[in-house]
Image 1: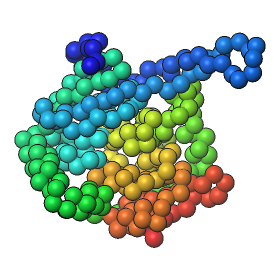
Image 2: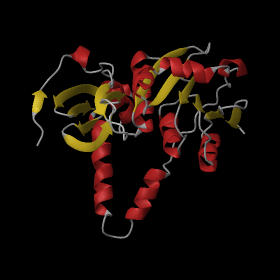
Image 3: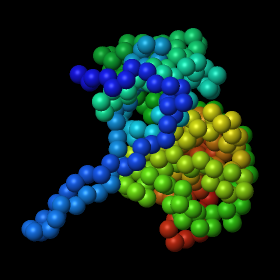
Length: 275
């Protein structure tokens, strides 16, 4: 059982940036060396409920939680857009946070109906089909947008490194960044989970009312199929990955008209979608 540190917080604190890395002591194997310390990334357990219905518990980095919740809600198809999220309230506990999210009646009905369908097939041999439908969902086809100019990718790894303030101190963090139409890094969100980082960025972009059909979004992690799902649901125009995509990821990006670009370490950027 966790003990609450505080049961409610000010609205200004619900989306506070991540705290500084934690200093943790360590001792090297060699005898006689003094005790040292390292700055390590923090993580907490986050439980999310929608209209009182428990939905998910996951480990996240403890900053920009409202961005994450809003992005998670859209990218996981719980709500269609931010207008269906009426309120987000966070309660802080020791090493954990409870998020109580109020959503529209339409979204809540759809969420409950989906959960009933999953429960109803749990013992009839169809649960594998349901799981596949979640892994390979039907998504809206996007309107195609122009590719970013090639020069905007010049030195992009160095610019990403400059924007990743938390990773410079502690490492062990993925990042998702939005670059505007001029190639400037506007928003960076970091997290121990690559999905979490993108969800935080999506939430921040939608709250700020930024048109993500222009510019491009960068993920520093492996570009998994789940990230394509999130990008399409959030109606991003261009997704850029620092790690090579899989063949299936490319197929889905092409099918849904999402621009997909890989920026290798030493070679020129590679356009995988459009084909």
